[in-house]
Length: 329
Picture 1 (cartoon, one colour):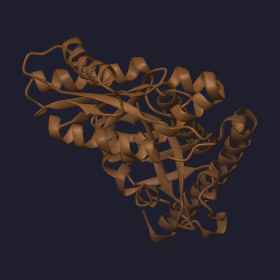
Picture 2: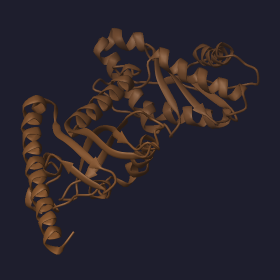
Picture 3: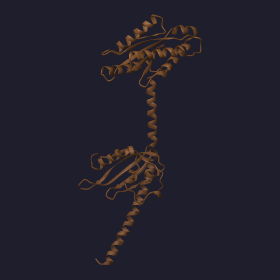
């Protein structure tokens, strides 16, 4: 082939290449329009295509525009790293592992959710799904295609709902009057701690049963709303003195259970005395003398929850029988 023929062949190839480019641009435009029509309601950012051999990614510009980039800011040829370099550090290895597993044909589809950095430094959350559409005879990936969605708003809503559900779960365990645990859940927490003590996971656990003295008499003198005021004040004082890891519950009208992990009987006695003293000095809306009594017990090896509770209740009964306004352990 002479030089003239070579030149003619090059011109033909150049013309064919330009034709292919025009066709690709037209097809991409049509795909973008179709994406917008079909999936505008679901955060769709369009399709993407990855020519693996030359590491060139063709994609709907919405994928980059959602990150704050304009079409003019995008390089003429975008590689895979243009997006992976923007992955959140905590998501990077997980995303890359998924891609590697798919490229090596270990999983049928590449499907991931990840945070990707925006131009202004924030993060959006994308859901990306794709697969190898063509492989060599040896199984090496040649071409991939997929679709990506911006699910940031969905993730924010999901996070908010999870927080609300978590708060609801916490509140469902609480007594509405005092904000302490209700009867069922304070017993549940005590049961867990006793089980841990039986298994040797906790050194011990002590409990205090604190009961407001003469509550029915206060109700008859000043009305049931004043009785509620006393209960609320006692709950507040107990809650204010709890340490991290302690539990307290409104066991029944005017009686509280305080559960103290890794606490000796002497320490629990001292804690109960502090609550008793503070309650006796508290201010109320009526000129009433408010006192309380408490019974304390420390877990003994192989003891059941009922046995531990009954010993504390026996201590409380002794106080009630011998003048009240004391702590017995």
